[in-house]
Length: 488
Ligand code: G6P
Image (cartoon, rainbow, N blue to C red):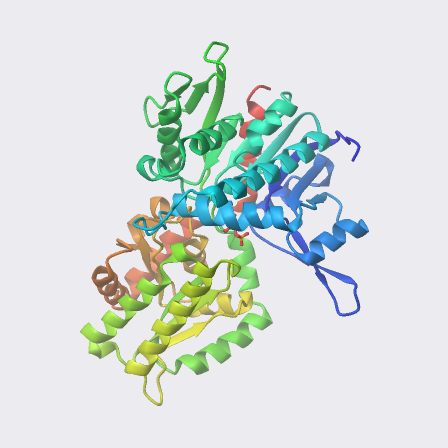
């Protein structure tokens, strides 16, 4: 493809804002996604010459690329399906995601063998495809915002191709602690850190994750990489030289805690389809009962199984809650290509069923588990929530923790893991738990259920205010402006 060199703001991410489905008649049906980046990009307006570079993920996407179907402002890369599978399932989701979320059962895994090396080569190929596309499309001096652990090598590769660009990388995940990151083979660790340091600016959701990266970078090569974070209030940076001799390049570190989109959520959660689902959910829950609500992807890091165990402990240790509370647990399918995710989903179903078999009565189903993704029903559950349970093992931010207090009709109590990024902003008004401590989580659920109404409402008000402090459009613009302010 000939270089176009005319985009001034570029976003790169594995999953793009649109995907295509092949219909029975062979036609392609586009499906648009939401999220922080989508509202962020729309905030800069069409005149900004923005381009979103993403990967073709489905057969429909690949077909769309083949047919030249597409949307203005989006370029989908037709990465071969096997290369994408190795990079996305093999490396991004089975290695990098696991490292950053501390998910390995370490006596047996990880084991970095020849198969890992083969998949790593695909991860490099996939990152290179992004770097080359961005290099082709970017105007002189353009701002490029690279997203997430799928694309850690892109900043370094792109800088080599186009040193004129201003490059940012944003991590939507936590960053691993040094000891855990050290599990990766040394050359891979170095490649990841140097890849990221190709950026002018690295963004994280909290300072905890930013410091995690800085500590890992410091370990790679203390001679060539110098980390500066003198006092917490001052700007942080990393100076580095690829050659061991000056000139040093600087990579700045910034923190942008993505918030909930209050305006959208409040409006959307009062539309007719949500009202309908409230009626249906109320029916299922039963009159006069309290609700403990959780909404997640069925994701290992979300800790859904321990959440269910904690709920069972609540029913065991506080029998007064039997018949009086329902755990509404929505766990939507995610990454089902990976056996470990399929097994986890089965375990969630098994434990929920076991609780219902043990405690259920003809008129009361203790756990309402639903695995079918339905955004309107999620919002209905948010509105009905007395308690929101957000107990991840580790989480970059966790937007559900921010969304439920904004949407809940009566103001909910929030039981929140201290290992979620959202803890930094919401910890004060939440009931905070260690996600591994099932007894403590059960006690926290009891405390949340018995919180006096006025206190609950007051806390929820403060939670909602903190949760919406940085709406998605502002979150995006802050990063773009900070990047433009460098070198410029
Ligand atoms: C979550 C994480 C993001 C990640 C995304 C990928 O939302 O917070 O860091 O990019 O999952 O999900 P996917 O379904 O594309 O694997």
